[in-house]
Image 1 (spheres, one colour):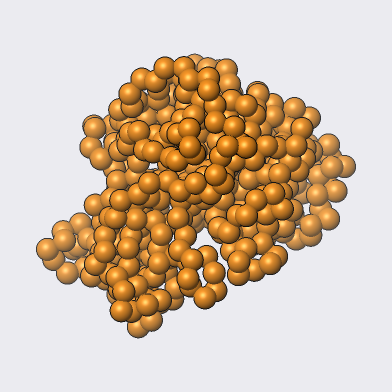
Image 2: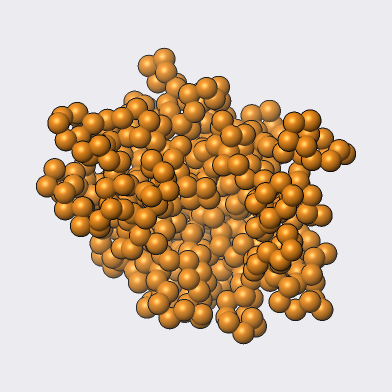
Length: 458
């Protein structure tokens, strides 16, 4: 990324046209638009909706992150998985700038690369390092295999995986020009230098030699229970404290801990990783509803953060849609990593903290009122205060609210994920049906990456 000079003339909310679109180019226009078969599907890149982060010096610039690339649910000869519609796609970080008239331009694009400098893909990881048995299919509906010239065979020509494959979801931009990115597979936390090359990694797999953030002679690892994340519901959001010492990430949903029964709970885990001392802390966040997700976090200071909680519903199609921004405070919350074993609680090496033999996810999934049991044991979740009801404040028609940009004047830039302007509708006869992503039931309003700016309540 090019070096930027300090820019203090920040564009005010009053002069900003809400819903200003981000620029895009067409990646592919060869597929049929299932909504209108006489039209071609326009896959747009775009796709800068996974997260956002402030440029460290330029008040009118922000970074935005793509996810793994255009894909659709697919059920083929090797089982259920994803069809990669632009198979050579490389996830990237874009640098964008607000102009005086509110128009957004793209200043630069940074492709993410492995530790050898090769562009990464969005393909699934090996099972031992974050894979979830997801089958990748090519644009012709055939399994992507180790040898693409031969038919799929589980023994002689198995499914192709990518040890460097990433589904980026969280972004922290550092003052030295580097970035930390979190993903939904492992989950992995990956440190990229200013050229987009991987220089460090943190995950929960002790046998992954790329875990090279060493403190006191040992690599920093995520707690083992984070391997219980739900497929496609891993570490959705990431930030770094203003002193640049501590990464703070939050899982998208409750984990499958110890099994799928845990996903019925409203309990979500926040993790803090001090990159200097190596100390890891875990805190609990209580969703308003178990079916909600968290999708963005940004540090205000070392204890307070803004956080997105929402339901992924389209407001033009469902009047119950909810998009909220909370201010959370971890200073009075309980670090569950620091709890000492006694007759009621135990730190389990694989499942994390157990309460009377149950995982925290099991306890809350069994009964929402069991939050009170944790309270009585002095296990307190983070405090949360509503600061923006997005749908009450803005004409916001999108389903996914994922990018959160804390601006120099204290306002928040909100960025939606448009999924490369495409979506899958249903699987018919082992074929995916993909169409433009529409916001309304009548399928007349196409989704797009757009930026909104709001001022949170004090």
